[in-house]
Length: 478
Figure 1 (cartoon, rainbow, N blue to C red):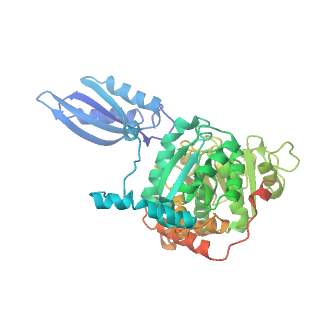
Figure 2 (spheres, rainbow, N blue to C red; figure 1 turned 180 degrees about the vertical axis):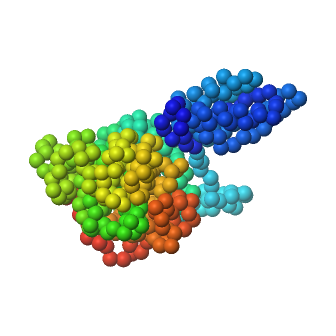
Figure 3 (cartoon, rainbow, N blue to C red; figure 1 turned 60 degrees about the vertical axis):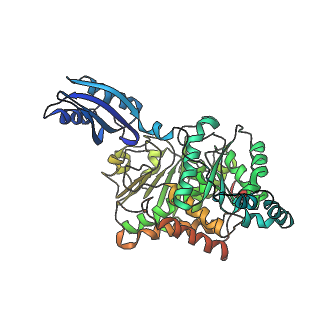
């Protein structure tokens, strides 16, 4: 890797550089070599035009970030006989005009069809629903539609960037719902971060939807919003940053432990990040009987004796950290079997991972830059996973939420339960198959067509079968 960047190039920062270069036998080779020396990865070379003296080439290149992209272009501009004509950011091009649209399911080709889809025929359907409101689940889009609700307060790893800037993520989420679960989803982006207003708005729009997917709402506000909406609505409320992440982590950890020959009840797990995702992960691990788990955040390990804690952190203090360790993250991972990071980049080094137990497991899930460089972690850990699509063992919520909602909508479920979460995690883990498991394959590909149907079937069964006892959210938060 060139000194130009220490970050990993990815398709998220892919650019296409149109250059004109003097046509000779080494022309293309000089271009690709320059990109490689600058730390970029050439993924495609397309000849656009040529004449007797010059050739025009589009170089599609993965870079690490915007600054790195500029460095790659600058290296090409320094070459003799090269004219950089245009640089296109492929991610921005993909977002032009948004990523989703509404399309009718009926053709409306003639007056007869119009009379049934709209007036006068539609009035009969309206009256039927007025007489029996439950028919809305059968006769309207409520049957297959989810609201993706955010206030823009905790978008990816970008923080509180507001509702307008949150839109591209919510559009992407809606596209993933459709692509992987056949679920129609729509962004509901709110220009308020007031807990009461958010609750009232979601309650008011709920009749149109069969489920609510809360997204990128900051902790601890997200806990109260989810809890109260669950109490007040008759449709499932699912906070993907919490439960989607927890489901995928449990699935991946189940298979990772199978590979290294350890059991969940005998391992020590350290979680970096006690926000929405980290809290949900730890609750699900505790429900599954983890041996010991230590929660860490900015103040270090959460331990008994700490004061001024939020209800969510107080619950963690009361239910984790068996030996009451009170030091920092580096000390916590010493002698641990599993590290799970849902926090911030570059908190640990390879030397820190070396202090973990033999056959250690590292899930460094901060995006785009993990808590520890995966290349360094792999020198010491038996299994390494990240949230990145360009690394092995990508732990991605898309493995869970499309199938979870598909199953809940099909079952006309009125709530999301812990039994559904556990069933979904088992389904994801089992999709890989014992004969396919190895240190670089502990989760299925997000494009594995078997995943969403398997998760949906598991959730449907959990919705219809006996429910497991679970700790109410109100008790869980103090």
